[in-house]
Amino acid sequence: MSEPAPISLIQHLSTVSLPAWRFLAETSSTNDDAAAWVHNGAPDGALVVADHQTGGRGRGGRRWLSVPGSSLTLSLVFHPIAAEKAHITRFTALAALALADTFELLGLTPQIKWPNDVLINHRKVAGVLVEVQWLGDAIAAVVVGVGVNVTAEAIPHSAVLRFPATSVESELGVGVDRWGILATFLHRIQQLRQLLPTADFMDRWNNRLAFQGQTLPIRLLDGTETQAKVLQVLSDGRLSVQLPDGRQQLLVAGEIDYQPGREDSNLFDG
Ligand code: BT5
Image (cartoon, rainbow, N blue to C red; front, side, top):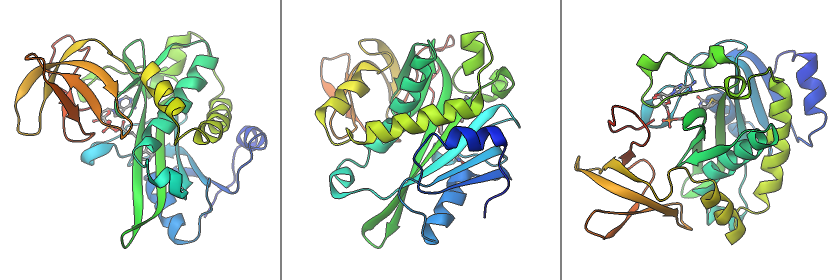
């Protein structure tokens, strides 16, 4: 089900080669809409974009907050080919890299906070939520959800955040066209997808990695807290860090929290 889209959105999307797209004025979660569409035959590359999202989700049951007219909230459906299925953890980075390239084209200096946040000046401007749809043991589709704070109104109150946030316009100091950013992002994600199985993709990810070489507090799954130096993301998407005793540890997304950059230096997961 799609609703009449703003003219500006239609114009911008006409510059992108999209197999199918749907616009919703308001929805609970575009990831849920995309997942439902998968069951009804959404083609590879299909887009769901909402003007406003009321029940946005982050990882692990967390929430993604947005305000009408101020954010980009969208989901893409991918049907991965075999070479991509072998690197399924890279779909999160695919969206994060495409966002980072988009922001760089605007003149900003974005970084990726492993595994799924895009930062500008060490503040979160966008988040990515990838959900895999299974058909038995087989991957049926990957839903890549993206939320971007475009205007300053999109930035949630700091009291509800675990990590400082910002918006594209706050960082740029000028207004931007929300749907123009969407079109640039879509172009970029289509291009970068060609690189997903390659070493070049990993280089790009590591080149954007925030806090590389810095020592941060992390909390392991068993609740232990320790300091760890951020080294690099490995080919399988795990983050390699160095513990105080010199040992290297490989972190799996969702299994640890690491908390850089916050003044009270608490551990975080957002
Ligand atoms: C994320 O999760 O950052 C993934 C966000 C994905 C949102 C998109 S919007 C379209 C699609 N449909 C959905 O339902 N979701 C996707 P995570 O790393 O778990 O971070 C969640 C945490 O980010 C929250 O617990 C808050 O602390 C913080 N947060 C919430 N809203 C924010 C915002 N607008 N800006 C910055 N931080 C925010």
